[in-house]
Image 1 (cartoon, one colour):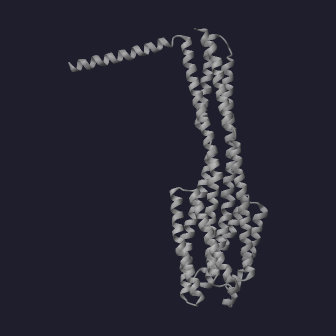
Image 2: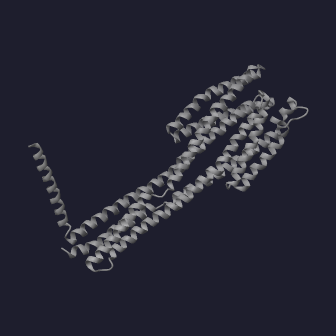
Length: 433
């Protein structure tokens, strides 16, 4: 009994579906109903195209706005954190080896570096609240008081000729290099990567919009073919105009996004190919400056080799910036300052016979000539970085400008395409009623 009931229910369901299909087919037998259904499908796809196109343009505009207003600033702030901490490491050591009348200036510069680093960290925290960046900022802010305490203790004991002063300064320098600068470098890398990703994402073509647009164009062509066969009219001006408007909207979107992609790529290339090596060179220069003083304050095996490698690395970064399209005048100015710096400290790097005395080494490290060369190198790099950062930001702004009014043009074209669709289809539908 149960089996027969189930079999009867199955037969009833199949008959119901068959009846529904037959009813649907009978409904579509009439031409006007087919035209109504085709008009509804075309209108629905056109609306979907308009919504997707508007969303794509607005999304890319928002990414570029974010790159200009937030990501660029957070990247610059993270770079300032590294520069300030590297400079603080060098200056904290300079303060115990320079002439007495310069001690106050070096200490003041060190404290300004810490203030600058703290301000830059707070700016980064407000501009980049992501968990990874926030964690690095908190770690840096937590270690800065300890670092400052060790430096101040080193200065105080060194002023009293206590050997423990050197130990405190050594611990502070190790904390700066092993923890602070490492975290600052990762913080800058994260922000620079986020900036590049935002710009590259803004330049990606919205293939989903193109796909829906292609479907709509195919459907419009099929509708025209169907109308030509049913009505013996070879041309439907409404559908033809609708097709042209959809094609115009897609072309306008593609051209705008392509221009934006070009400008965004220029900005990314400038950040990665020119600004990044220049910034790395500036940071390495501050570390090299600190290495020179470390050789005097608490020399260790391998210090001279590390300093030599650091100066060689500077030359490599400058060369990388030049070959990547860096402004010739500004990059060459930095290169010239580096050559002068290396020439000034060459006796410190070579195997002198007899070996240099402490006063001779001190003169090379903290003498006015060497200090001027290092300072000129830092100033030249800072000028080049600032110029290229502004130029890269201008490229990002140009990318945003390439998308200006694209959403309006796209929306107007799709809206007019809908009107043209109605203009083309309604007279043919009315003929059959």
